[in-house]
Length: 186
Image (cartoon, rainbow, N blue to C red; front, side, top):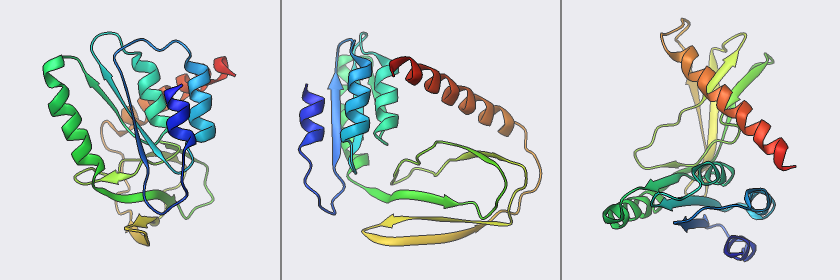
């Protein structure tokens, strides 16, 4: 398949390799394609674009998630140029890659997403977490222009805010549904 060929020709270098998968049709061999992505992605990022009314949105979103990229849906043909140009402009400017968080606690942590996507210009870092005890400070690190970057972030907010539990619950439900569907493909 085209996806197999594009992911298998990887040259090990410091540049961030970004693969764009575009389709206007239904995808039926999801399990095989998910396996290809998981086994051959390496350090690449996979961005998916679905055009028209027929793309398999579940596959496209999940493939982008596996690939640490994003899914772009384009419903109208007259939007193709603008939306693809917007994606190209975004992926030309990765700000922070390979992001990790040190929660600095031994408490049980449930966080989403499992793998944090790269940050691009103008995007926020959003991670939802459920833990028994909130630490005073966390450490966020990643690669910034091929240099290791790290910052400590003080967590001063010690109260619940309206809506945070709902956001966490929605993301946790999505993660559980994805795990169930993934188990069906195994």
